[in-house]
Image 1 (spheres, one colour):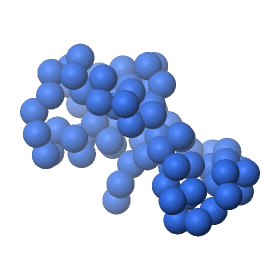
Image 2: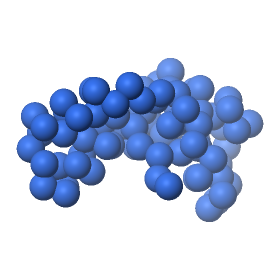
Image 3: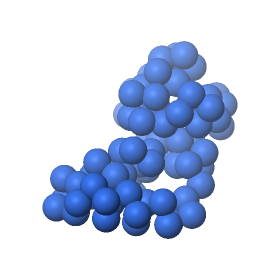
Length: 78
């Protein structure tokens, strides 16, 4: 299962044909734990390759997680 940031999930839904409005509504009504998603994403990245803590945070931010979420994710796996 792939972990997504809020913005990443909206982008994925748009790619699959949903309007921005519908994708945003759906994601905002998931009650998702974005910190948990960041931790899962960090874990998935580390299964594929090595990252320094700062490099992992940078990658998570690139994927659309906020700085706080990215730090949470990196701390959860380091």
